[in-house]
Image 1 (cartoon, one colour):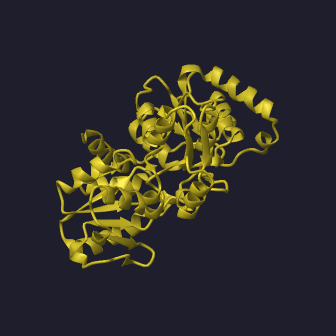
Image 2: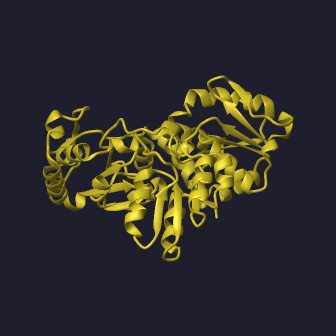
Image 3: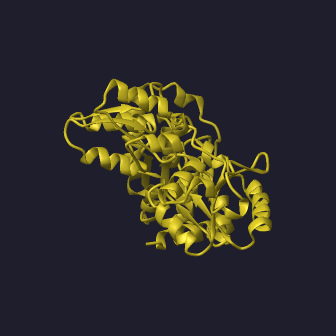
Length: 368
């Protein structure tokens, strides 16, 4: 059935969906999927809860899913089980006729929200006054479309946690300095791994409007870090690593590079979500892992690899609370609305923003 040219409706989840049993939710979600057929594709981010991601047609990290969505030319609707900036990227990369749906519009990203476009415009004036035309802006894909568009207009590009080293190398071949936003920790960890000392990095605090963590003359700074972070990955600590090593010396510690510098340095290994998944999958039977990333993924890895020990690095739960806003009631609401030729929670990026944001994304994809 077609789901084109639907009129937007509702903004809040109707109460009737909150009252359904687990079995009824599962049955109706599958029925709606079957009814929509090839007009529908569901994307599920790695950090999604199991009861949602089981209905996904594709799973992956944010950019991987957006690029998969770009190839779904026959689908009329892309339902993105993730957070808002991911759905924005999917909308940028898909056609004007396709509709990208986020089941709960309140599923945001605290890190992305730490880089506000007005604050960035103000910061750029300060940076240009200080450094002239020697700075190239780079944004992590975990950022809003407005931030991506700013970077695109100013000759910069986006990066992922996987390709950040290659992107920074590309940037330094063009300009003396890099502004890296919104995650200071990914920027710092990546630059340090490339051989840039901490003394050549400074942090811009957009709230205070001033530089922080400056250990040398400002004219020697090469990496300008935006003061943003992931609320999940900054919960992991070196004390947690120490306790695991005291408890189980055979336990390998692997963390995401959004963790703080001291945690990444203390761990045995670090890498993107995809790297962590692959590293554990390829490890020897009986290997033991303490993982510093989102709890839903860690628990899923433990289930997928019963021949290995996979534990959360932290002793307390570390869920991405905004990601977990995507639940079965919201997914069912989105699907049944589509099946009834209604449209809820469509994510749209205006054409000018989309054009420059896509410019930034295309530059990244062209970097070898």
